[in-house]
Amino acid sequence: ICLIVIGNIYIISYLNLLTLGYNFFEYVKFIIGRLECMISVVGIVIVFFIICISKKRKRRKNMDQIKRRDAGIAYIADKEVMEQQKRARKLTQELNTVDRSDFEKIEKIVKELLGKSEGAFINPPFYCDYGFNIEVGKNFYANYNCTILDVGKVTIGDNCMFAPNVAIYTAGHPIHPDSRNSMYEYGIPVSIGDNCWLGGNTIVCPGVKLGHNVVIGAR
Image (cartoon, rainbow, N blue to C red; front, side, top):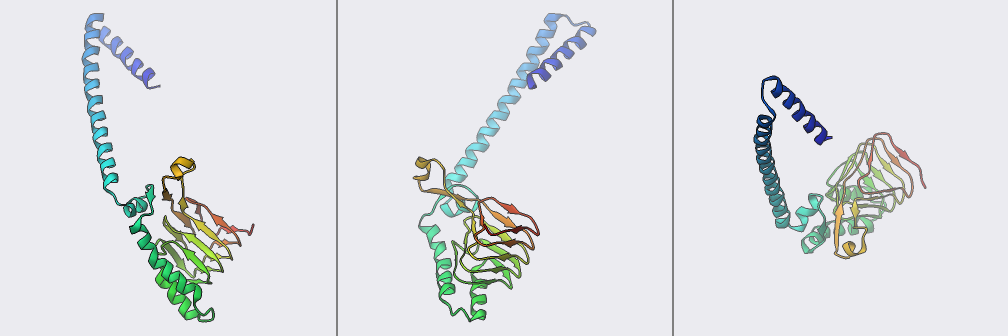
Protein backbone atom coordinates (compact mmCIF):
# COMPACT_ATOMS: atom_id res chain seq x y z
CA ILE A 1 0.00 0.00 0.00
CA CYS A 2 2.85 2.38 0.90
CA LEU A 3 4.56 1.66 -2.45
CA ILE A 4 1.30 2.33 -4.32
CA VAL A 5 0.83 5.64 -2.47
CA ILE A 6 4.44 6.70 -3.11
CA GLY A 7 4.13 5.66 -6.78
CA ASN A 8 0.97 7.71 -7.18
CA ILE A 9 2.68 10.72 -5.56
CA TYR A 10 5.57 10.52 -8.05
CA ILE A 11 3.18 10.10 -11.02
CA ILE A 12 1.22 13.16 -9.91
CA SER A 13 4.49 15.06 -9.40
CA TYR A 14 5.62 14.06 -12.89
CA LEU A 15 2.35 15.25 -14.46
CA ASN A 16 2.57 18.53 -12.54
CA LEU A 17 6.15 19.09 -13.74
CA LEU A 18 5.14 18.34 -17.34
CA THR A 19 2.47 21.04 -17.12
CA LEU A 20 5.20 23.44 -15.96
CA GLY A 21 7.34 22.65 -19.03
CA TYR A 22 9.84 20.21 -17.48
CA ASN A 23 11.03 17.32 -19.69
CA PHE A 24 11.57 13.70 -18.63
CA PHE A 25 15.28 14.04 -17.85
CA GLU A 26 14.66 17.06 -15.63
CA TYR A 27 11.98 15.01 -13.86
CA VAL A 28 14.45 12.15 -13.27
CA LYS A 29 16.94 14.63 -11.85
CA PHE A 30 14.19 16.03 -9.63
CA ILE A 31 13.26 12.51 -8.40
CA ILE A 32 16.90 11.58 -7.66
CA GLY A 33 17.26 14.72 -5.55
CA ARG A 34 14.12 13.86 -3.63
CA LEU A 35 15.25 10.24 -3.16
CA GLU A 36 18.55 11.41 -1.72
CA CYS A 37 16.66 13.54 0.79
CA MET A 38 14.36 10.63 1.67
CA ILE A 39 17.28 8.25 2.10
CA SER A 40 18.99 10.73 4.40
CA VAL A 41 15.84 11.14 6.50
CA VAL A 42 15.26 7.39 6.68
CA GLY A 43 18.89 6.86 7.67
CA ILE A 44 18.58 9.40 10.49
CA VAL A 45 15.37 7.74 11.73
CA ILE A 46 16.99 4.28 11.68
CA VAL A 47 20.02 5.54 13.62
CA PHE A 48 17.70 7.21 16.15
CA PHE A 49 15.77 3.95 16.69
CA ILE A 50 18.99 1.95 17.03
CA ILE A 51 20.23 4.37 19.71
CA CYS A 52 16.89 4.19 21.57
CA ILE A 53 16.83 0.38 21.45
CA SER A 54 20.46 0.21 22.62
CA LYS A 55 19.70 2.50 25.57
CA LYS A 56 16.62 0.46 26.46
CA ARG A 57 18.62 -2.78 26.38
CA LYS A 58 21.36 -1.18 28.45
CA ARG A 59 18.81 -0.06 31.06
CA ARG A 60 17.36 -3.56 31.21
CA LYS A 61 20.83 -5.05 31.53
CA ASN A 62 21.56 -2.80 34.50
CA MET A 63 18.25 -3.61 36.24
CA ASP A 64 18.29 -5.97 39.19
CA GLN A 65 15.75 -8.81 39.33
CA ILE A 66 13.35 -6.90 41.58
CA LYS A 67 13.20 -3.99 39.14
CA ARG A 68 12.75 -6.39 36.24
CA ARG A 69 9.87 -8.10 38.05
CA ASP A 70 8.16 -4.81 38.89
CA ALA A 71 8.58 -3.59 35.30
CA GLY A 72 6.79 -6.68 33.98
CA ILE A 73 9.99 -8.07 32.43
CA ALA A 74 11.08 -11.70 32.73
CA TYR A 75 13.15 -12.12 35.89
CA ILE A 76 14.80 -14.75 38.08
CA ALA A 77 13.76 -15.17 41.72
CA ASP A 78 17.23 -14.55 43.19
CA LYS A 79 18.27 -13.90 46.80
CA GLU A 80 16.94 -10.34 46.85
CA VAL A 81 13.57 -11.42 45.46
CA MET A 82 13.25 -14.25 47.99
CA GLU A 83 14.22 -11.85 50.76
CA GLN A 84 11.11 -9.79 49.94
CA GLN A 85 8.98 -12.92 50.25
CA LYS A 86 10.14 -13.56 53.82
CA ARG A 87 7.86 -10.86 55.21
CA ALA A 88 4.77 -12.37 53.58
CA ARG A 89 5.73 -15.88 54.68
CA LYS A 90 6.10 -14.79 58.29
CA LEU A 91 2.78 -12.93 58.26
CA THR A 92 0.87 -15.73 56.51
CA GLN A 93 2.39 -18.21 58.98
CA GLU A 94 1.10 -16.01 61.80
CA LEU A 95 -2.30 -15.65 60.12
CA ASN A 96 -2.65 -19.36 59.46
CA THR A 97 -1.82 -20.37 63.03
CA VAL A 98 -3.73 -17.67 64.92
CA ASP A 99 -6.73 -18.55 67.08
CA ARG A 100 -9.56 -18.67 64.50
CA SER A 101 -11.94 -17.06 66.96
CA ASP A 102 -9.67 -14.04 67.47
CA PHE A 103 -11.24 -11.93 64.73
CA GLU A 104 -9.51 -8.71 65.77
CA LYS A 105 -6.09 -10.37 65.54
CA ILE A 106 -6.93 -11.77 62.10
CA GLU A 107 -8.01 -8.34 60.84
CA LYS A 108 -4.81 -6.79 62.22
CA ILE A 109 -2.56 -9.31 60.45
CA VAL A 110 -4.50 -8.93 57.18
CA LYS A 111 -4.14 -5.14 57.39
CA GLU A 112 -0.38 -5.47 57.84
CA LEU A 113 -0.01 -8.08 55.10
CA LEU A 114 -1.89 -6.41 52.24
CA GLY A 115 -0.60 -3.40 50.36
CA LYS A 116 -3.95 -1.61 50.72
CA SER A 117 -7.18 -2.56 52.48
CA GLU A 118 -10.13 -1.13 54.40
CA GLY A 119 -12.13 -3.47 56.60
CA ALA A 120 -10.78 -6.59 54.89
CA PHE A 121 -11.24 -10.02 56.43
CA ILE A 122 -9.62 -13.27 55.29
CA ASN A 123 -10.51 -16.66 56.73
CA PRO A 124 -7.26 -18.57 57.14
CA PRO A 125 -5.50 -20.43 55.69
CA PHE A 126 -4.36 -17.84 53.16
CA TYR A 127 -1.29 -17.85 50.92
CA CYS A 128 0.48 -15.18 48.87
CA ASP A 129 3.97 -14.34 47.59
CA TYR A 130 4.43 -10.74 48.74
CA GLY A 131 1.23 -9.25 50.09
CA PHE A 132 2.26 -5.68 49.27
CA ASN A 133 1.23 -6.29 45.64
CA ILE A 134 -2.38 -6.95 46.71
CA GLU A 135 -4.69 -3.94 46.95
CA VAL A 136 -8.31 -4.46 47.96
CA GLY A 137 -11.17 -1.99 48.35
CA LYS A 138 -13.70 -1.64 51.16
CA ASN A 139 -15.31 -4.68 52.80
CA PHE A 140 -13.21 -7.35 51.09
CA TYR A 141 -13.89 -10.90 52.26
CA ALA A 142 -12.06 -14.11 51.31
CA ASN A 143 -13.12 -17.49 52.63
CA TYR A 144 -10.89 -20.45 53.49
CA ASN A 145 -7.85 -21.51 51.48
CA CYS A 146 -7.49 -18.48 49.20
CA THR A 147 -4.25 -18.27 47.22
CA ILE A 148 -3.00 -15.11 45.49
CA LEU A 149 0.33 -15.28 43.64
CA ASP A 150 0.98 -11.56 43.51
CA VAL A 151 4.12 -11.35 41.36
CA GLY A 152 2.16 -8.78 39.36
CA LYS A 153 -0.14 -6.31 41.08
CA VAL A 154 -3.58 -7.59 42.07
CA THR A 155 -6.23 -4.86 42.36
CA ILE A 156 -9.64 -5.73 43.81
CA GLY A 157 -12.50 -3.24 44.13
CA ASP A 158 -15.03 -2.54 46.87
CA ASN A 159 -17.47 -5.09 48.33
CA CYS A 160 -15.88 -8.17 46.77
CA MET A 161 -16.33 -11.70 48.13
CA PHE A 162 -14.35 -14.87 47.48
CA ALA A 163 -15.72 -18.33 48.26
CA PRO A 164 -13.37 -21.12 49.48
CA ASN A 165 -10.42 -22.20 47.33
CA VAL A 166 -10.34 -19.13 45.08
CA ALA A 167 -6.96 -18.70 43.38
CA ILE A 168 -5.56 -15.66 41.59
CA TYR A 169 -2.39 -16.27 39.59
CA THR A 170 -0.39 -13.38 38.16
CA ALA A 171 2.75 -15.50 37.81
CA GLY A 172 3.70 -17.33 34.64
CA HIS A 173 6.55 -19.34 33.12
CA PRO A 174 7.74 -19.82 29.52
CA ILE A 175 5.91 -22.52 27.56
CA HIS A 176 8.99 -23.93 25.81
CA PRO A 177 10.91 -26.29 28.15
CA ASP A 178 14.36 -24.89 27.35
CA SER A 179 13.21 -21.36 28.19
CA ARG A 180 11.34 -22.58 31.25
CA ASN A 181 14.45 -24.39 32.53
CA SER A 182 16.35 -21.07 32.43
CA MET A 183 14.51 -20.19 35.69
CA TYR A 184 13.03 -17.02 34.22
CA GLU A 185 9.44 -16.18 35.12
CA TYR A 186 7.14 -13.20 34.79
CA GLY A 187 4.08 -11.54 36.29
CA ILE A 188 1.03 -9.98 34.60
CA PRO A 189 -1.35 -7.83 36.73
CA VAL A 190 -4.92 -8.90 37.51
CA SER A 191 -7.76 -6.48 38.24
CA ILE A 192 -11.24 -7.12 39.64
CA GLY A 193 -13.94 -4.43 39.80
CA ASP A 194 -16.45 -3.53 42.52
CA ASN A 195 -19.21 -5.81 43.84
CA CYS A 196 -17.75 -9.04 42.45
CA TRP A 197 -18.40 -12.52 43.82
CA LEU A 198 -16.08 -15.38 42.92
CA GLY A 199 -17.53 -18.82 43.62
CA GLY A 200 -15.71 -21.82 45.07
CA ASN A 201 -12.62 -23.10 43.21
CA THR A 202 -12.57 -20.13 40.82
CA ILE A 203 -9.17 -19.63 39.18
CA VAL A 204 -8.20 -16.22 37.78
CA CYS A 205 -5.26 -16.45 35.35
CA PRO A 206 -2.51 -13.86 34.63
CA GLY A 207 -3.67 -10.71 32.87
CA VAL A 208 -7.41 -11.21 33.48
CA LYS A 209 -9.52 -8.09 34.02
CA LEU A 210 -12.99 -8.47 35.55
CA GLY A 211 -15.39 -5.53 35.47
CA HIS A 212 -17.91 -4.43 38.09
CA ASN A 213 -20.73 -6.65 39.40
CA VAL A 214 -19.23 -9.86 38.01
CA VAL A 215 -20.35 -13.21 39.46
CA ILE A 216 -18.36 -16.36 38.69
CA GLY A 217 -20.14 -19.57 39.74
CA ALA A 218 -18.39 -22.48 41.43
CA ARG A 219 -17.00 -24.97 38.94
